[in-house]
Length: 74
Image 1 (cartoon, rainbow, N blue to C red):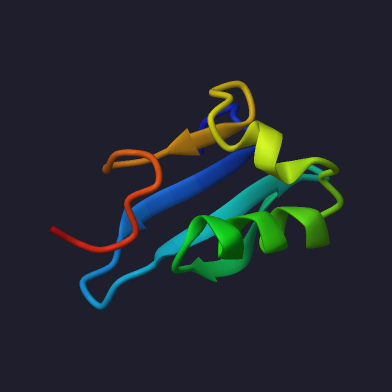
Image 2 (cartoon, rainbow, N blue to C red):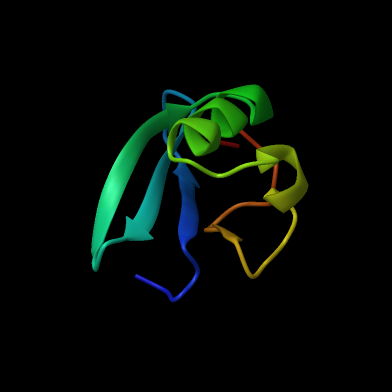
């Protein structure tokens, strides 16, 4: 995994993107997000305050294998 603490993985064929966070020295899957709202809910549950503000910050979030904010497979 990268050094970016949050990774939004590639869209799945059925839609949605797996979200993982690196903390306490390991990677933890938070769930599958189907929208920006879902992602914000996951990040808030993981203890990230003002989660909306970090979505487009490359120091916080790596959008892997698809553009940011794209939730379905093309």
